[in-house]
Image (cartoon, rainbow, N blue to C red):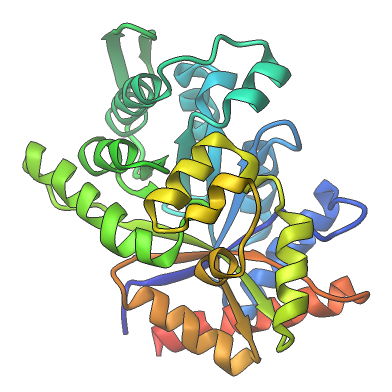
Length: 323
């Protein structure tokens, strides 16, 4: 028996058309039935995860729900604290709030914000949320945010931050209840992210919080089809300056060309038979992460069948951890 977990991202890149709210709720219920520990969702230009999870909280009993992530530039932290009061009551002990800056291009295009000093914004955002949500009140005058508000009372709710570079992982180690990675190679998580989190935690004299390790997952044995699916569904990541720098720091210089190399795909994807995928999930967890957060990678014309195979693998891995 362990406290390690296996979670799944609700957004399915290969699903056409994109899941609507009713389909997403059905998928969350299916995940709970299969024994998957947690569901994660983004909140950006698509559907709002907090609203979706308020509905999911009523229809589920034990599955954890979390944002990965809610973008800081899109809403004030006091508004977020108000919203999660509802989830804290509907799903006590089951909701985890993950926040992050998002990408410069997306935030400026969608919201017209002045995207600057993302790490400074993240640090202040985490400080406000931890006080407001976990303490029940906040009085804060910072460089980027001002916040003065009272709430009904404190909530038992982890406040996590997204991280890509060393400084972000250090901030999460010092200021948050966990770090959420996204498309980070496995060696980078072990050799860079975890030590940076430990460094941040040590500087403030607290235990190192958990690392949520994001990965793509496919139940499929044709490596070329897996590679093609990653390039087709997630081809934008190597074109992003932030992700290029991270991949280069992780030892993949080909990222500077804006493309997915085979080695890059190998570093962020778990695939094979259901048994092989389950073994690889356990292997990733053995490297120090507290939880695997899987983005399903459906392959082939039968999207529903491929997704079901992936979910069965995640459910098996979850159940084996609890055995």
